[in-house]
Image (cartoon, rainbow, N blue to C red; front, side, top):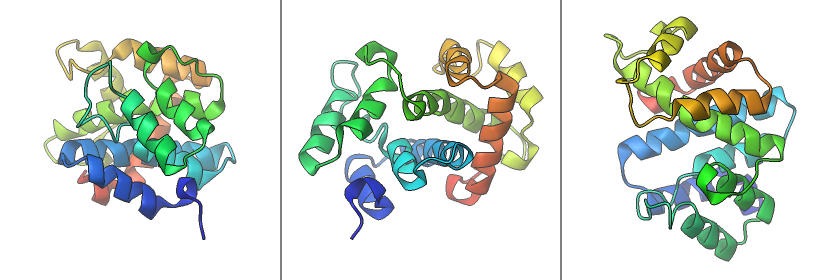
Length: 188
């Protein structure tokens, strides 16, 4: 029997128990896809990393404030028996928690979170709404447009690629390709 942290179905059940919004579910799947692709690239524990990506915001819909998210999620995951490395990775994805990003997983989750959402937003303004049309150049151009996807923290996108040690253009291209693998699930 798989442990919880390696069991996608169990993790997906936790996600859908706490998250009903289609856009938040798709965000979870997008971050999962990017983190999973990096786990493969870095020869890491793919299922574990993918599930961290899947669950990083599972508590956000019910606990959206900085006082609650991701702390409530961390409590819930502890009660369910998730290990501290898994929980700490999730806590580290929000700068305001003060949890330092020290591991490759923590840095990868942070790097994929805002960018996955931003690439999704760029895709949705394309006439075809298809990831197949999204290019690195168009993502970089939209990053400079402060009026586009205002909620996305550009500084986090730049800083996280630097923390991960991957040039921004390469990181964007890698995430676009990772998202393309899951485009049906993402509706893109």
